[in-house]
Length: 386
Ligand SMILES: Cc1ncc(COP(=O)(O)O)c(C=O)c1O
Image (cartoon, rainbow, N blue to C red; front, side):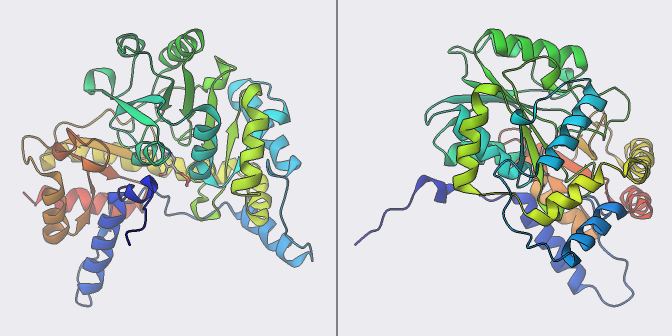
């Protein structure tokens, strides 16, 4: 008898994870004393949580508190801090009812998608994109609509692209700064998109996980321009707390209760201990600014050094900690190119195929969140490698 397998089982792998495994294997195979593999494939800060967040978690562990479930939307004290953060950074007043603490941004996506869309709905996004958007939507029976964006729009979608879509999509996902290109929607561009979506009945989902990691332009939140937009954020990047698995959603009023019901059923709550740590992290901006200064120095160094190593077509590195390089003049097979770079130069980077299924074979993504010395060393190794 053949048993049925659901459509979710067809979700493709997140290929960056395979590159990470290859880099680990390469490192393990090196003889003692050989130069180590430089990790530019991973998108997670090499630093840990801010000191105060760790101290708060330690205190909670020793307090005798049972560390049980919280309300599905999270600790009220943490939601207050998130509201304060929205006021500080964007000047937006958010009632607590619109703020939901989630299991990372990753845990926020299924909640947002299930509350806002139905199977068969069409959700647009620019390519290159963060692969789980497409993979989660597809697993839920929704249809991603890909807008091929190029360097001329800094790999970001525009209102003009949206206007051309017939039929109009049910939703739009944007990310600024984005992964993998590291580019941003500037304030006027984001506001134009948010207002167009609101007026045209298109539910906007704004992934703001890389906020705080912007180097040249100020950052804006979709919450400033639209009450119908869903904002996704996380403690993983700016707050350097990836493994704590904690994020948040800013919800439109009509979706708050539906998302709360979904969260109660799907996750019950985000981990208590991580919520305590996240709350404390808001007092540690000075330490976090130190991380950002380091990313900025690595970015500036790579922007100057990579062209000399033959990577001449780089995305404008406006934010996050990524550089997206068009390697079409050197290879038409980015996966093979990355495998050879790992083997011969000992530098691990991600092929673009994960992020753009039609053009990714000629792009690679450099992540510069690793140790500063490694980023400098990578530029040197690549200069001598062809
Ligand atoms: C654009 C983007 N959104 C969401 C996520 C998921 O982050 P989290 O660790 O909060 O689940 C990532 C992780 O790299 C990302 O790059």
